[in-house]
Image 1 (tube, rainbow, N blue to C red):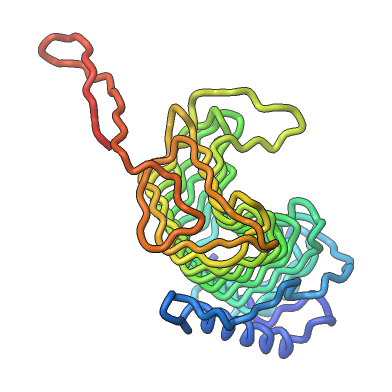
Image 2 (cartoon, rainbow, N blue to C red):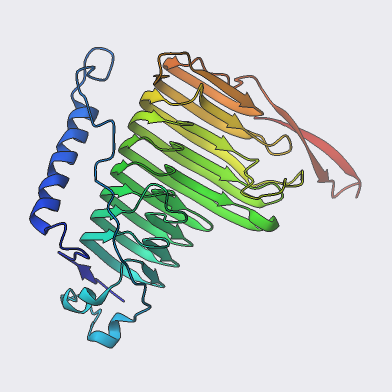
Amino acid sequence: MEMVKLRKLSFSNAYSSHSVYSFNYIVYICICLLLFVTNANGFSPTIQLPTSGLFRNTSYLSKTLVLNINDFGAQGDGFTDDTKPCTHAPTAITFHRCKNLKVRNLTTINSQQMHMAFTTCRRVAVSHLNVLAPADSPNTDGIHISASKRVKLTNIIVSTGDDCISIVSNSSRIHMKNIVCGPGHGISIGSLGKANSSAYVQNVSLDGAYLFNTENGLRIKTWQGGSGFARKIKFQNVWMKNVSNPIIIDQYYCDSSSPCPNQTSSVSIDSVSFRNIRGTSATEVAILFACSESFPCRRLYLKNIQLTSASGGITRSFCWEAYGKSSGLIYPAPCISSGEMIIGVNVKSNSTQRHKVDYALL
């Protein structure tokens, strides 16, 4: 499937294309002002963005279908405009094994599952997408990316009951820009490594976002017992309002009714940066790095972080086995360790055929 364009597609008469586009324009102007109109300390204190939902959550009836757009006349040849066949698309859309795909100017409302998913896709560009679902709706991720490469998400508004954007196993080169998220569970890498599985996520970036009233902010979550890695991840230029767990890495994630067993193996986390993150936290712990004792978080980097309490109290950081450095003004005070960490590696000597231990400074 190549160059399939989705344009001016709406699933409810409640939102005309004109009003949606106008609203998008206002939101994006707000984001630009927030991120680029600065005072001496970096952000303008006079900018006030909404404290409640950007949308009014309304009950909608939806019907999920599984369709092959080729059955409706789509060409996918890189030249033909396949907009008309796509008017048959339901509120939940999954793209599987797609290449050179463009999705633009689309509104999807109140799906009973993930609104838009990309699995095993290459070279995807999604822009000007609105996703709307009630705040209490479970498993309604806005955009879910799995086993995909070279995905760009630009000018996206997500209001759901689960992750606004989730990126999972074997995905790389995922770039997000100008994202509005709230309510929901925030922007997540993971979960990774469930049921002792392997997962690989790398080269992910977020540049420019506004998160409000979300259960998490910028999150990386892995299960105990998994393997693989999450590395080379950058979050920058993000404004938050009343966000629980604004910055969180959790290598003890357990989404289960019963306690998860302690296991030594883990998906490793390496080279993750948080830059220019400002706003208010709904919880006392605004920065949380709960990393594995066997596979500590390495090369974490914090720069210009200001996360104050939404209720007027204090905020603090919590770190466990988290290593890296920070610069600029950081509040709450960072707790990552900047000291050297020594690990032992078993190396087999070719000359003696015996094992010895080499030590590396990280």
